[in-house]
Length: 406
Image 1 (cartoon, helix red, strand yellow):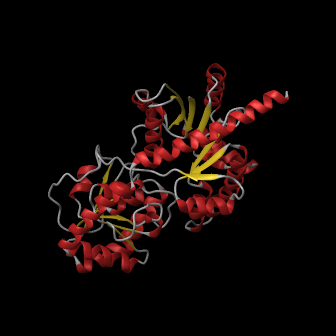
Image 2 (cartoon, rainbow, N blue to C red; image 1 turned 30 degrees about the vertical axis):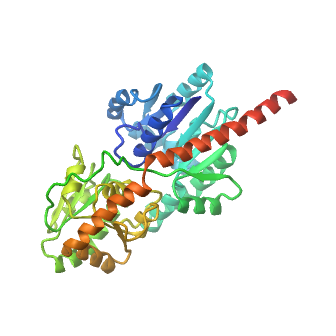
Image 3 (spheres, rainbow, N blue to C red; image 1 turned 90 degrees about the horizontal axis):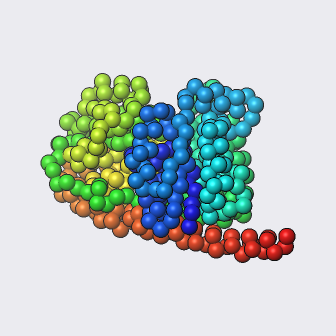
């Protein structure tokens, strides 16, 4: 089968949430199908990653998103209507390229990952189209609005309403919708009723992420993620303000490493606090995770699956997570991960793991087992294969009937 796959970012290297998901899907699909990727590059530098991606797929067509032009389109949308995030990614060059390739290759299926690039598949209703929302971005903007001040609060509220209307329109016009968790499916069915929706989740590379067995740094805590992403920034600020001081009262040597690329100014300032280190981008997060005793995921805003938590569990790192961070996983509570939302309860869980070596070791073993049991990519890709088969089989009779009627 010939598949066009449209996604927001160049899905290589797989070092952040959506890129991890899209890369693993592309690697899987390319084993059985001819896959052509259409994506946007995050600036000119991101074009350097296209060459490596071509090793996995039949072709890659990409256009860089230039910050000034993207911002200008979003401002126009704010003033004159339409979702800002859709307008920001509306690159004429990529529209023209996908139209040309469609006429040349005539794909059997189009898969779109993320609603803000669904615009590139809208002109092709003659082929089946799967809209992989992964999570509903409109609800992310709602969360942002709840934790922001005016005027950003107003802008985020506008985007939430407009993007939800767009998500509803796309879901009803495409052949099938996918989200990544049971929680997202529940929200989808509530907000976009009477539209068929399935679940294809994330996995974790269990060979790449595994305990190395090295020595641990005493009383060490770690958080990983892209550190200019609003939910991550909010998470580490909240942890350092409300949780870490409580931990350090009971474990004075407790220390936090914030490990991830592009730390915002607010994150960099956290390094001025006692026991807090901000690394910035590192070539490989695994040594940092492997040296820590406890992983924390204190996200107060979060949709979908937190890959950072899956990776920590796969590396046998006992974790403490908020409900927002944990709820997208299939891992039961206590099986390597403790769940708390109250700052004092969160701190108590971290302290227990730092102080009780036997308990920490038992939780570490459970973490790895939980990842092996619940987080295999093979199972999630099997679900995707089933959806593709059902959608394309259903499509063939309807196309044949249409031809016969004409």
